[in-house]
Image (cartoon, rainbow, N blue to C red):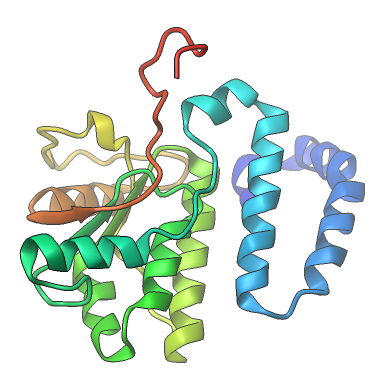
Length: 216
């Protein structure tokens, strides 16, 4: 689907022919994995390795590394400081640099089933500025929700936007089109900006505005 979005005709055939040996090897390995958690780990490792080999400067700038699970710690701190848990209504959660959706999928798996549906529809939000991880995150989040609940539901709260450059965003009514993402994305950004975000989780692009990448 991604290849179909970006390439057509002879270009598409050329690209697919070049990557076919790699795709077949990856597909064969993925086909051997039946556990959803293992699939997630495989995808994260594959994506991280690909990006670091393909464009190490971009990987560093965007903070493409994967950190240990912090959901339980965030839940503890939310209760300590606000007297609420992540699953309580009124606790709006944002992952501002979601990557492939690692923290959101872990959050879905962590939340009690009786709280999940409302949170998923209304109070879990995430953003991504790179198109490939944006699409992967969307698929991961929806699949994880389906695995846990037994039913598919479109995730309406992921935005294709740079969180660090999103202040003062207004919906002007103008149609925006980024890689096939049309005005619905604008609606999502506007809706997210109206939310009283209480908890921010995730792995931010820590080098986003750094001129010297040797400075950590």
